[in-house]
Image (cartoon, rainbow, N blue to C red; front, side, top):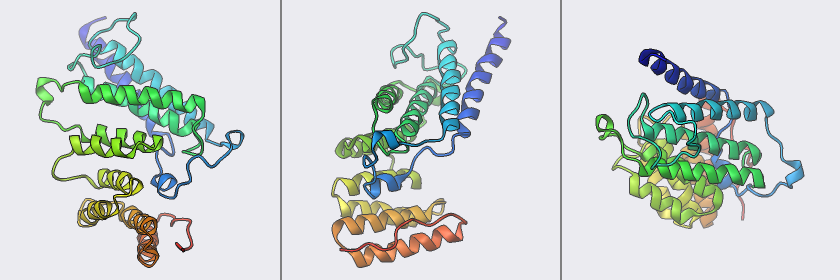
Length: 265
């Protein structure tokens, strides 16, 4: 295969994987953990969208082939890791490992019924996701991308640790890889981990900063997470005030509100 044709082929694999991933309808819900709804559904009652699973499997197939062909092109090398992935290539090695981790985690999310229950198959995919995301954090950027951050990888790994109940580990990871400024979606994930670990004041500080961000396109989620932190701390009046703001902002944005009437003692 000519070099140009090979490059185009690798690009098509990557973009096909990305296209299938975008078809997945639900890849994360903070409220599952903020409201402690995880693990409450019997395994035989878990439900999920079969089309989501099909799209996740297709995304995995293309991203795995992209990893395999880009840089190494070795059919005998079946297990991605930081040692077996070159930093450079048509696509960054970091990105290739990140997407393998991201698709593996969405596999977990789908098979667990969006956090309803950690089945054996769901856990197997979560373990794969952890391995690939840790590898993406360990692998150096290529020289042309060495100034890039890895906070987006750490954020996804934090979601994974939240799903495992490993909140302190989640906080440690994001603080290790964060910059001075946090993107609002990263603030939400960090604040959730802080709240679940009982660090309510720190969670509120992170969320207050997110409220000031002009780039925050999910203000309703910021207020919702504030309400959950207040409720867990026993401040139910403040929790309900923040919940009302969350529902108002969700309505303004044309989104459904949160399915909670009021927080109570």
